Structure formats: C-alpha cells, structure tokens
Length: 290
Image 1 (cartoon, one colour):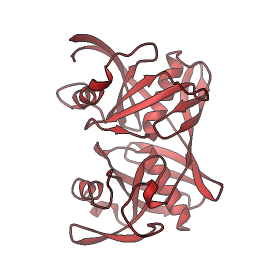
Image 2 (tube, one colour):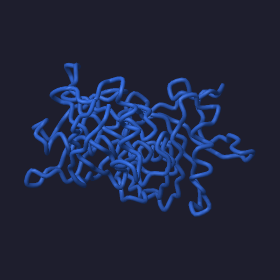
Image 3 (cartoon, helix red, strand yellow):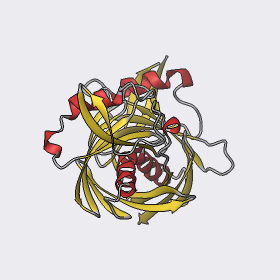
Image 4 (cartoon, helix red, strand yellow):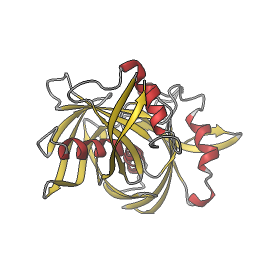
C-alpha cells in the first residue's frame, strides 16, 4: 500500500527527528511503525534522522497528548529529552495543544512541560524530567550491588568506571579529564551491548569544567553517536551531583549546543528540570510503501 506521508523534520541541538502527526487518526499501522522508522531514519536513502516521533492522543485522564519515539534502528525508546522538546514545539505551533503548559504521556510516565513563547513561536522548553533511580533492577542492570556508583566494569579487557542510573531510560556515565581520547564509535557499542545491561544502555562521557559547567559526548542506544542527548545530560548532572562533583544548576555543553539542568530532591530521590531549545528544519511529503 502506498501512502503520501506528511512529516516535519526537527532537531534539538542537532539531535534530529521525523515528526508524524497521528493526533487525529493513525497513519502508520502499529505493526509497521518500527519498520517505517528504520526506513525514514536511513541517511542518504530517505529523510534521515536519529529517530521518528509520533504524536498520538492519550487515553490517560491526566495527560494532554502522547509522545512515542522510535530510534534509528527501529527500537522504541521509553523517553528522549531532545525529542520531547521538539514534540512540545510541534504540537503547540501546529495548534494540537493550545496551552504553553502541557502534560505529555511517555512510555515511562507523564512529563510536565512549560514553554516560553514569543509571538506564537516556541523559543525554549522546560521539562520536568522526573525522579531518577539508581536501583539496578529498575534500570535494568545485572549486578549484586545495591547501586552501581563510580564502579568499574570491564570493556574490551579494560576497566571503565561508570555510574549507572535511569531517568525513564538507562544511562552509564563516565567522568574523564580528556574527552579527546574517547573513541565513541569503538567504546560506545561495547558499553551499549555489555552483558550487564539486558535492555542495552546509553553511554556518556563527561568532562567537568567547573561545579556548574560540563562538557559531554554521547553514544545513544539505538542511534549511535549523536550531537546531543537530553536524558543523558540530565542523568550525567544527577550522577555528578550524587558524587559531590557538581552543584544543583549546571550548564551542559554538547556538540550540538547547550542544555541547562536544575536538580531537585523529592522523597529522598534526585530529579531534574531540563531546559533547552528545539528547531523546525522543514516540512515535506513523501510517498511511502507500507
């Protein structure tokens, strides 16, 4: 079956996505979403992106709209910080949601978002990323440790010190003084597919510039090297705060731009707000065989 697919291309600090509006009706059948996402994300042969985001109605009474994201490899992710900012800008500027404050259903939970709007254009999005967990079964991670904080794993016969946590999706954070020696294309997939992580994991490497400023590079689960990762920036700052290395307000420098992370505490757990921009690149129509 051939369909004419209307889509938008957006990015959050260079982390780019194909946006598909299914708020009124389903366009891509459920059993084809993974396959279509993989096809659309293939650079050089299709639109090209780090992922595909679907705008779906929410069946939950306490949510305004539903966010779904599929990675470039076709796997569905629980959450994406850069993606949800693009989602918020898209649904507001398309008049799908009319309020600059919205409750967005994700696979993990419901996120509260606040938009800064100038002349009907969204200039910045603040997301309550929710509470983190360092509990290995919730990440998930195969270990007998109660928490895996600043501990070593063996990667390609070499020890790598990581802190592992989840903010709705799993992250392994390594603090280093020298990002230039990190070969993401080599070490990234080795950590992502490490036997300790049954559902794979995102890998981040962080250089601390000061207690309020860090530099970060990322290997993203299902997508590879990316220019930015919002949940990764959030997790990395939470990890640094937990280790006593960072303050509550931190600016994160990523290859694609900057994010601001603010830590809060609730019920003896660490949570965070993430704030940053999102950009519409273009809109298009393509013939798709599904």
